[in-house]
Length: 416
Image 1 (tube, rainbow, N blue to C red):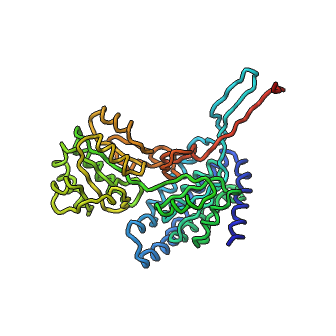
Image 2 (cartoon, rainbow, N blue to C red):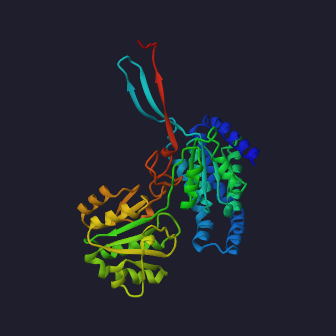
Image 3 (cartoon, rainbow, N blue to C red):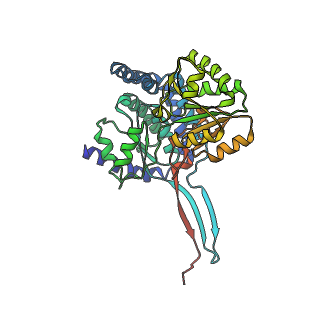
C-alpha cells in the first residue's frame, strides 16, 4: 500500500508543475470537452453507478445515503452544466490582487497562484468527482480524489470519461487521480504525505471530518455538517414563508443545505404551525417539537437536546417556538454548525439584526436554505461548503482554490 501511495503523490506533485504551465484557453477547451464527455458517456457511467446502488440496497443502507449515491440523466446534465459554467468563468490564476509602488520605486505585486496538490476525501456523492475535477483543473491544482468505497464504480467511471476527454484535448499528463483502493488505511497514509500534498478538503459526515482532522499532517479546510435553520419572524408573509420552509426541507432532504430546524415567533406560531404540518404531512415529514410546539400540534414527537444538534439528512424536522428574534439568534449560534441560516420577515430591521449577529458562513433573508450552493452563487460549482473561517468560508469556488505569492520587481535597488 505504501508504495502505491508514494507513487501516486509523487506523480501528483510532478503533474502540478506541468499543469501550472497550461494556458486558460487550453483549460477552457478541455473543460468543455469534459462537459460533453459526461453526456456522451452517460450510459457507461449510469451502468457503473447501478452497480454501486445495487450493492447499497443489498447492504440495507439508508434511503438518504442511496439518494446521494444515485446518478440519473438529470444529475449528469447538471454535472455537465457545472463544467461548462466553470469554463466560462474568469481564471483567477495569475490575477494581480494588489500592486504597490514603494518610495524606492520597487514594485510589489500580490498575484494569485494555484495551491498545488489538493486531496479531497468524500463519501457517497459521485457528482463531487466531476465538480472537484473541474474546479481544481481550472485553478491549475492537481486533485487526488478519494471517494467512499460505496461509490467506487461510479467514481472510476466518471474519472475514465474525463481522462479520455483530457487526452482528446491534447493534455497528455494526469491532472487528477481517482484513488481506486478502498481500504480505510489509504486515507491515513495519504494524510501523512505533507511533502507532496498541500491541502486536504474532507466532505462527508462529522465522523469522517473529525478523523481526517485528527490524523492529518496537512492543512485541512473542514466542511462540517449542515445544521441549517430558518427563523420565521413575527412580521412575515405566511404563504411565502410556508413555501420556503417546505422547499428547504423537502426539495432534497439528503444534502447539507436542507433545513433541519425551524424557529417560529410566538405571535405567528399557532397559525403557521397548522399550515406547516398540513404541508409536511403531504410529504411525509416527521416533526419533532419543543414543549410549546407539542401543545399547539397534537400527535408529534417531543424534541430533545440531541435533536437541536442533529443533521437528519432525511424527512425529519425539529421545530421550536421562540419569544423573540434574539432567542432565535441565540439558539442558532448555540446549536448550529455555522453553515446556512435564513430569516423570513418583512421587517428590514429584523433582517439587519439577524445577518449581523448570526455567526454562520451563509446568512439569508427570505430565501430557501437550498440556495447555499456554489452553482447558485455563480461560482460554476463548488469544492464544498466550508464551515471554517480560514482560509475559506462558505461555498468554495475558484478564488478559494488559490493562494498568492508576491512578485517584486526593481531596477537595481539595494537595501541600505
